[in-house]
Image 1 (cartoon, rainbow, N blue to C red):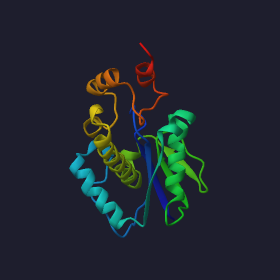
Image 2 (spheres, helix red, strand yellow):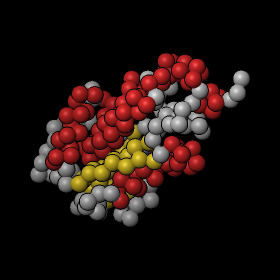
Image 3 (tube, rainbow, N blue to C red):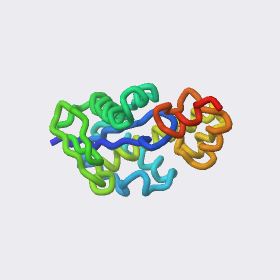
Length: 188
């Protein structure tokens, strides 16, 4: 049976795409230390991401853009990113396990598992790939929009990011459908 673990990164931030990853682990090539990406240091996540890409039977990372988040809502955009990740796998899974309580429509049976990123290795692997890909993207966007501190806050609504949003208004990668961004975009 080819089981794909699926998870997302970036549902809560005020800026940037939402990412999803799908991973089919190879039972013959163990990867020690897989766990929820939020429980790992950035350095450990990066090291594990390299091992996952090297040892998994198949893996893919996909995203839904800010415009899609604003048009669909964050939940539906997340499910869309998950569908894209599964569709991009080089091997079709026979089953999918998704972190959380909502499942995307997929061409194989799919089951949601609350805290799956903690308890299921393939979902942990997907969590790590989605998080490292999204973080790298936000670090790259920091060069284009340095006033928002994306390299540090990864688009989350930190005090410094909210202050920058109030000072400069939203930029092209801010999610206009999120209340703090919508409020910052209002004329004074």
